Image (cartoon, rainbow, N blue to C red; front, side, top):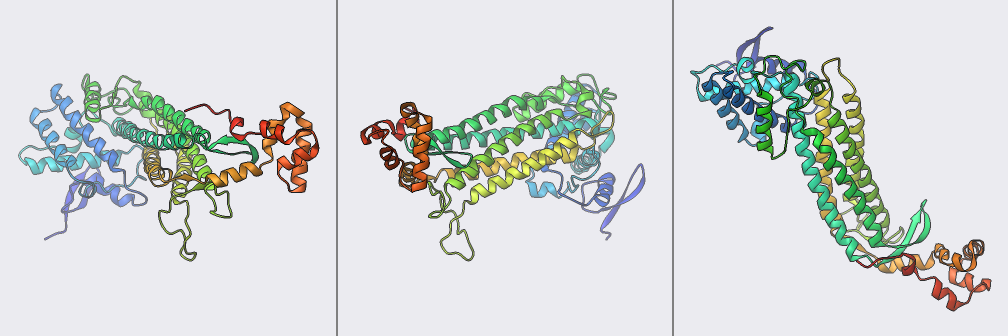
Length: 461
């Protein structure tokens, strides 16, 4: 028994593995392009949902036979219930293929057609004429791109909210714990750890608002533009009906009321939304760096924070604990920043009526969203949740700081205060000793004026 079968496309005969559900065009792509990651299954699932919606829309418009439409729907539903491992088996193509995603679109068309034949072999279902009816890869693939991107951003927003909630708990718990501030990596005036965390919270709240506002642009679907944006061969109201069904499936308000020439030729929405993802990545890197540096030590670093011990930190140094969750999220942030360059370049490319960097663009976008979604949950649950402060260390550093001298400026002047700070540094004494020695104020005045908690202007929470 042969281990392959023969199918034909417009270029001729092709040998295909006998148990494969795909057809000739998929097999050509599988042999022509073998490098890189597989096309994300999120894209495959979105394409399947679109094929189902298209079949229903075509049936309603009497553009294809009702029995064929019902059979396409049944085939899609049979595929959508498969787990990812089984689904991947018949969608083997890689990201680095044609820039329009045509081969992946045809992969879906061919698999749906073959599954339909296993359900009812008496009704012939053709990949192009039936499953792809009223569609082009040029409009269906970017439609799937926007749908999957919008869903990925929804998950990212939830992860961001979760980290915000975890940080807010620390903000409240440590609202009155005074620590020394730092600017330019040098000592500055005091603040509370709760105030410092409130800054991190606000960064993420701003990032979340950017994502929520910009994500709306991904609701615009290119569906209905077909080959170059004119809508050639698509039935009336075809795109609107698909948008309605996609809105129901994904619980998201999609629309087909958009310029189709834009939808095929540009991916500005993906570009601008990923810019917000990159901004989130930048802020996460800053927050994670602050946490791991404030927790450095435990005896030869800042030592102001105690980080949870999740796993042994060294294969040679017993008892070592490392800020691994911070390292994971900052590596993810670095990858997102790289992806943003890829997306910016990809969004600028293409020729005339179509951008031809679609697969790499959506792959980079989805990777960024997935990386930050996952690492934020890990950072929140496995680092921030278990984070505690070393109040004794914080007090020690506040007491040793010379920048609390700022509280003296209104009373004895900036120049004289600077002289006291510099004298304390030179002599290796505390600020209080140097201040009293200067003769410019008494011990009682120093104790009255230099009160670290008062210097924070803290408000009750």
